[in-house]
Amino acid sequence: MFEALRRLVSDSVPGSAGAHSRVPPHDVRIAACALLVELACADGQFSDEEQHRILEIMQRHFGVDAAGAKELLAEAAAANRDAVDHFVFTRQVVKEYNVGQRIVLAELMWQVVLADGDFDEQEAYLIRKMANLLELEPAYLSQARKSAE
Image (tube, rainbow, N blue to C red):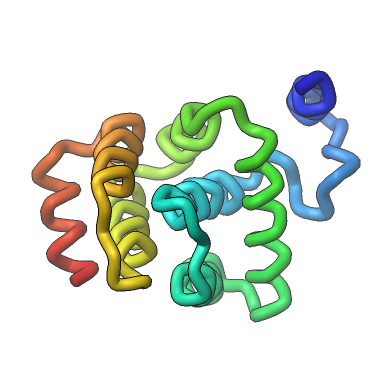
């Protein structure tokens, strides 16, 4: 807990990159990917299908190669473990992404949730909660699901 707080404080000081990261600590891609990881793990498992889907998303939407996607996924998973809640990631995404980009992210969230063929109540709750924190209207979330399917 104290280590997470120390890193949070040191990462938030301008000019001091986090020692645990080769990716800039406030990279919005990490925040977006951390949300995808959290959704993938919501049902208690991080399936190969979900992991593969997240890696594909990062390559296609974040413009990184396979090695870069794996590095971003590792950074996002670490950030997700260190985070107290989702708000730190959703706040950054809202700050840096416009509504259109957040709608695309919602579609990507649905793709991850549906990747393993299972959709349970915990995933349903979490995706609605994240969409709310991302300041997306329920109609946008519904449209994103239709696009993902």
